Structures are given as structure tokens and as C-alpha cells.
Amino acid sequence: MPHGCNGRILRVDLSKEKILTETLDDIFYRRYVGGEGFIAYFLLKEVKPGIDPLGPSNKLIFASGPVTGAPIPGNGRSSVGAKSPLTGGFGEAESGGFWGVELKRSGFDAIIIEGKAKRPVYLWVHDREAEIREASHLWGKDTGEAQRIIREELGDDLIRVAQIGPGGERLVRYACIINDLKDVAGRTGMGAVMGSKNLKAVAVRGRGRVNVVDSEKLKELTNWLIQNMNDVIGWAHNYGTGASIAAYAMIGNLPTRNFRDGNFSNAEAIDAEAVKNTVRIGMDGCYACPVRCKKVVRIGDPWSVDPVYGGPEYETLAALGSNCGIDNLNAICKANEICNRYSLDTISTGATIAFAMECYENGLLTNEDTDGLKLNFGNAEAMVQMVEMIGQRRGLGDLLAEGVKRAAEKIGKNAEKFAIHIKGQEIPMHEPRLKRALGLGYVISPTGADHQHNLHDMGITGGGRDLNRFAALGILEPIPLEDLGPRKVKALIYHVDWCVLNNCLLLCNFIPWDYLQETEIVRSVTGWNTTAWELMKIGERVTTMARAFNVREGFTKEDDWLPERFFHPTSSGALSETSVDPKKLEEARGTYYEMMGWDENGVPKKAKLEELGIGWVAELLR
Image 1 (cartoon, one colour):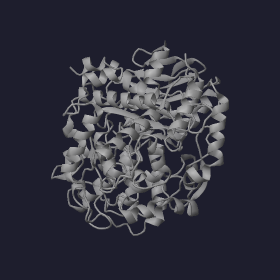
Image 2 (spheres, rainbow, N blue to C red; image 1 turned 45 degrees about the vertical axis):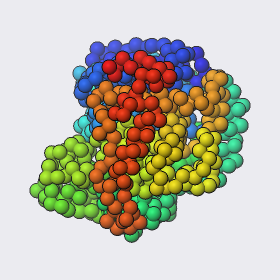
Image 3 (cartoon, one colour; image 1 turned 180 degrees about the horizontal axis):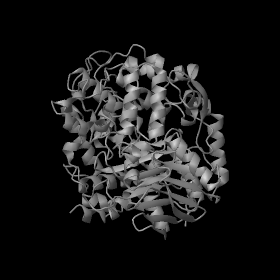
């Protein structure tokens, strides 16, 4: 068995109340690695096509990776996946913190959960043992209270808890899974899957060690990061994400009023510098990471915010802020806290409220629909109330808990034009009218629009560290921002391969390792004689498996498309004369399919599957 892994996974059948341990061999680890790779494999192999994502046949898979818990910065991540109740396709998300490391140290690399418990339960995993425990007394409690009770019940404050709040229990389709109260596997509705299984939490505690091959090399790489931290990642250490909000507003990358407008005059009031100067009381971080990039905020009246729930990252500041037309930082922080209490994805929550605000301003929703709430853009009080209503599925919140796609279908009256989503998942807070490769990345993402396994074009438009990093992949010259030709498509593919690889290794995307350093990390942890080429192929393999899952579920190339809004300029601001050209997007989509070895409909070809070592997938696509 390679170092960095336990060789054991846990299988839990909640319907039968059975727990089994399974061993995996060396070749399986090297081919699928961990994290998203494990999830793609087990979903394809074991989840039948067409099942209800909120039914007992769906499988919820928690997975660590070989780097999880190793002595290297960025090692604190874990992954969770299932068939998504939001999109009906491949669902997967990652979170940081300490939970994944504790799972690894407990002696397991992954947990596969199936069935549905007869009553609320939680899973208690510790030192190579596991048990299903009663959780009826926890059902309905927010995440902070539930974590406190679990730790008291098990007698250990160092227990790490991944859980859902009332939003997950009530099957909000974009409910997330929260660990450590502020580290979030946010996207694709994994919290709703957890709630559908009557599973309140997975508590983990382990005292094992993560063995590595070359601890000295890992120490050398860690020292490099510490010595160069201010230069290579000082922004994260000093501010966390969101320090560029004012600059984003100037260039058009700050989504404003449901991606409709381009002017947000008070952007500096909600950026990370404003957070630092007004409400921030410190910075937190993940296991063994010196960067400490996570904001911690405290607020008194009129919006009381408990610091145990952390603070808002960029996506939250924009989704619940500018995209709702709101510049009240305290209200945004309160909405972020409610999302973490209820286990709601802040991106989808903010985007869904922005959709409702535009519907309200256009008369598609009335005061009768909102229970008298004046749901105009810019109404901070209404935004905070609506977050609570979504978490409780109360009033209009019950409809909005379904996400913008389903809500628009229910409202009718052409509300679909205000529903900004891809494959049913609300779009993150980056502008495809500005970043053309990002827009293509949104389109082809197997999870619906995602900004993490994606290329942000500005990194390859000029000189500096980013372009120098890409040179190692043969991308030697800058590519213009507006370009969406084959060079840009190739850069997107190569970059996404590495993003997906990191989701398998569970290595943080923010730590700026170059490709050679990352290869050294994998070699030093596992002892594999790996190369950067093999590692890229892992990312390509898993991307292709996720695509195969969606093809099997009935997705076609028509699902790989942007909302109509992005084919028109913003109403004002830097992008008021700029939009995505649908013909160029269609051509780029075709180029992407060809470069990936997929046919004209986006179906992976048998020869490509064989080349990637997953020929068995071809039988699933027949």
C-alpha cells in the first residue's frame, strides 16, 4: 500500500444499519487517487442511472486524498459527492479545515453511505471503528448547537463534525455540508442528500499517523512557502479572498443585481479590506497551514454575528452583496452566519435571492408572494430575512429553496430569463462576459457552473508568476482576454486537469505550488515514481468519468450552454458594450470536445476511455 493512504474505506448502509470495512489495492489508488477520483468511480460503478437524488438509492461519498494530513501546507481538505439534487448530474464539493485529516487519522480513506435511516442518526468514526448513533435530539438544531452536543455526548472537544443544519434537513436543494462550523463543501446540494438519508452528522476522531516517504523534502517545500509567503500568497494571509472587489467593480468582474448591471458605486464598503478594518477580529486556517486565510468576524447590534461561524469569503460578499445590490457589510456577515447555521451554500442562496429580487421588481412576484416583504435590490433587511426563510422553507423561501431553475419554471411568466444557472446550478461570482475561458469552463463543468475547477483568464494575459507557471505546460505566450480560440481552450483544459487533480489529492488550490513542486509533493508523500504527465492524466481521467456520469443521466451538449443574459452587455459599467459571442462559444465548445477526445455531442469516445485506462466506462455509455 502506498504511503499517504490507509488502504481501507468504510461502507455504511443506513437502511440495514450495517457497517463494513473494505480494502483497496495499490493500483486502484494510483489510478483514482482519492477525493473526486474515488467519487467519480463509485458513482459510476454503483449508482444506477435515473435514480432519485433524494432517494435511498443515492450514495453519499466522503473521501480524503493521499496529501490529506501529510506534513505540507494545503493538506486539510476533504471531498464529498453524490448524484446532485440540484442538477440531477454529477455532484461533488470540497471543504477545508480539520475534518478530512481526522478521518484519515481514524484509519479510513473514505466513507460510502447508502440507504436511509428510519430515524435521525449520526455516524461516529474513531480509531478504525464506527457506529451509528441516535440523533433525534439533534434534528432541528443549528450547526453550532449540534456540534456542542455531539462533543459533550462523546466526551471530546477535539472531535471534528461534518453536518447539516435545518436547511439540509428540509432538503433545500443547494444545502451544503459544514465542518468545523465554517468550512463548507458548498456546491451541488450535498447537504440535501445527507438530509434525505436522515443523517445529521459524521463525527470523526483519530489518533493514527499519516505516513510519508520523504518528510525532509516536504519540510524543504514547506520552508520555501513560509519564507516566500508574503510574495506568493500574501494577499490571502493578510485579507483572505475579496480584497479585489473594488477593482473588480471597475473592470466589470463584480456581478451586480443578478448579473444585469455593471455599476456598483460603493464596492469598497464590502471588500475584504473593509472587513478587516471594521468587523474582523482575526484570521483562522486549516490543519497545519501557515497561510491562515479565513476571516473571523464579530458584530453586535443591529446584526449580531457569532465569530464561531467565521466570516464571508469573496463569493459570499458578492453573492449576498453586490449581486443583490447590497452594500451593507454587517447584513452580509449576518446572512453568511445564517447560511452556516442552516448549512446553505452562500453562492446559490445569494443568486437565488437576486433572481427573486429581479422577479419582484418586474412584477413576477408580488407582496402577496413575499408575505409583504419588499424584495427590491438593495434591501438588506429583506435579504437577511429571505435567507432565514429559505433555511426554514417558509413562505416564498420554500419555492426559492428549489433553486432558480425550478423556481422559474414554477413562477412562469418568462421568469426563466432571470434564472442565471447552468445545468441547474447557480453561477458563481465571476463574469463570463469578461473572462471568456471561464465562461466555457462554466459551460462544460460536470457539476454545473463552478469557479474552482476553472481557468480565470487574466492569469494568462500577461507576464508574471502565473504565465511563467503555465510555461511549464507549453503555454509560452500571453493569450488575450477576449480570445476564445484553440489556444485558450487548450489552456483551459490543461489548467482544469490540475484543478481536478488537486480535488483528488485534496491539495488546496490557493497554495501556489508550481507543477514541479506539486509533483515532488506527490512523490514525497506516496513514493510513486510519478511525473507531471501522469498527474495531468489523472485530472483528465476524472473529468472524463464525471462527464460519462452526466451522459448516462441524459445530459447533452445543449446543457453545455450559458444563460441568454451573457449574450448581451450589462446595462452599465465596464461591460456595457461587451458580451459573449454565441457563435464563438459554440465553436470553442466543439474545439473542447475534440481536444478531450469526445464526439460532436460531447460523449467520450471509446479510444479515449481506453487511453485513460477506463475502458470499462464504454459499456456504461452504450
